[in-house]
Image (cartoon, rainbow, N blue to C red; front, side, top):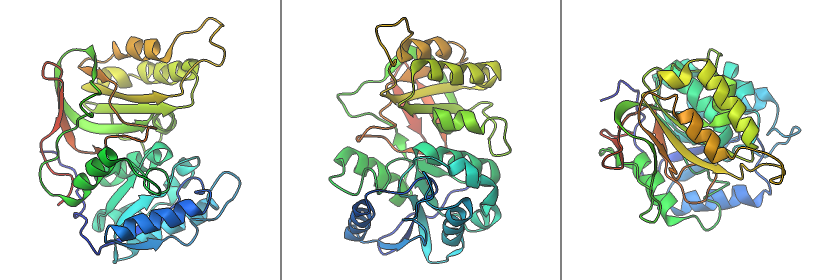
Length: 314
């Protein structure tokens, strides 16, 4: 069992707070669709005051976005806080978050992509389990994928053991490095993890199982970020590595000499002193696994298995 702080499970009739810590959901119908979806499942919804604002590529100023998040933390009615979407800007609000209030009254926190920075900070400051998975104004506002839905809601609503983190049957893990390992699940979007390294909001990766995904980055940029991890000793400190989808991470001009993203990932994986799986169905894809960051997981490449032997909620 991990020593993580777990939030209470979500029940029908509970209030879900919607926030925009990064960019504004656009068009507005995505917010409306997200609210309809959540209410259709039997939950009550409380939108943040500033979720529709636009300040450049951000959903309002840093103070406004943090104000919405902190208001949801302090609202006794709100049981879960969902980021509507990712985008840009979450690292800007990390110094403004009410971490102590969240520790005293733990709640479900969910999102992925740019929200990675906030999830890392919450683990560092609160040891609270957070959920890296689908977002209401991205995957859930219209025609959600059934596999994605089932994985997500099971983790948030059931206090039973999470069990295996599995791809759909047609999607096998790519075995990159053999072995068995146990460690705390941490990570998220590669660029956001890289931007958090060296700050007071980055948890230790010693003995962790790091999960990484990315979207719309050239291979040389993926290479540069992983070189930073390796040079900082972060890869060598890991017990294991899980590589999700690196969507649209292609060279700008394939006709020019380049290294593929797949080659770069497998090269840096050799710096990990433990098992490595690729092709985890996680990241910027409609069909995805939800990852409970902060929980301990076990990897066994012989059985092609990733298993979490405890619940994510109480």
